[in-house]
Length: 620
Image (tube, rainbow, N blue to C red):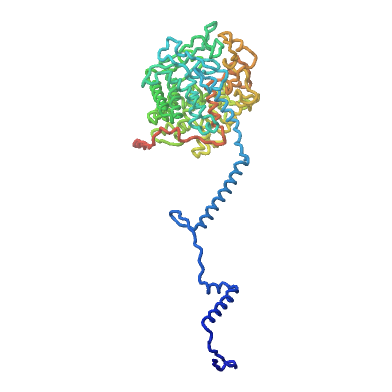
């Protein structure tokens, strides 16, 4: 059956009756579905027909404190590994590629000379030598010193110490001055010694000396009544053939003649100088508490002995030292020794003594005279004045010490002026060497000491931010003082009319006939007796052994020099002379003018100056 209706577009609308069975409809739908599915579907159609698709499940890594995506974790770890490999590769390249390090600047001439000058002390050692002494022609010697003299009963062990010069005598007076000077230079310039690689060396030298001094008296006692002054003898009277250290010419290792011990019970100068040596060394060895305290105790005992009014006297009075190392006074040693004991202990009683005006007057601080300001093994006043001026510059303790310190400061300025070429206190040779001993023989030891004081005082003023000082109305900068020191040391090192270095082993032209027994006799397993060594003394040939670092006595007042072994006034070195040279060289070495301002004050307590008393009431 059909139903007809009107088509809105003009045609009939036919609705046919559905006569198909259910099976027919089912077949038709199946046919439709297959036809529809056979065509490819786009994404939209697929979503309509199939519904939402199954999503891929993400994976995570549990790190304990945080959970992160596994993919992110893998990427992070991989990146770090790659970065590490790249960094390691770069490091490997940097390590394997040869690099050009900038070479340190070569040591200056003063440093080179310093290293050699210290070697002289190795050559002068007495006793059982250390393995590292580094002087091939020296050996153990003086092993019976103290034992062979029956008159010496205080201690039988006087082994050790240093031989003084070209002979084998051990003089405590110049040797203690030499050790004090070396200790002072270490206290002020330990950094320069270290830079030169010589700090341990110079400290070993000082300890070799102080160990011997401690044997020279009862160093464990609180009071003493005598001490040893000398081992060996050199006094030779006309016609005498008695073997001794001057009559014989023998290697120290071969000495078989008696070596007497000289002792004294009235030797204020020597005791005070030895006290200065031990006190200054105690500051050098302050890090070794036990040894430093031992040195301080010995210094106190010696100084107390030196100040005993019932024991006052000069050590050289009435014995052979009067002809070789004569002491002219003990007052300068009181000032010098008291100053060092103050620095070593901080005990103000020592400072009161050293700054006492009457003490200064006795020591010659106001005398002037032709030798005023000349620092030597005999006269320590100039050194003591510089040492105490240091205290005024950096601590300024004020009353009651100010009057004495101001006096020393003023006197230091005066004798520093006398060193300058603008004044005529001292003559100079044509080559420029200052004549501090007024043309007498053996000038270089005094020159070296003056150069040290001038360089040191210049550094003091620089450290105190003081640009210079006055000589009368004229002002001079600190560079003027340093220039004086440099010109004098340069003369010693070869800038002189003879173009000769007076430091053996430095440069190409230096003395070859040094007045020195050990250096002039070959080490050939032959023992030359007392007179047997004379042939080496009188030989015209150069010494078979070079005594490196020895500063000889020096030229005459006309810049002349005779390289002759028998003339000790030209060719003999000495401990005191070399100590001054070492001190001057270290002060001038390096490119910095710096001192250690504080080490010397390690034992000094804080100062609280006392106000001076009010002036006396005015009276008409």
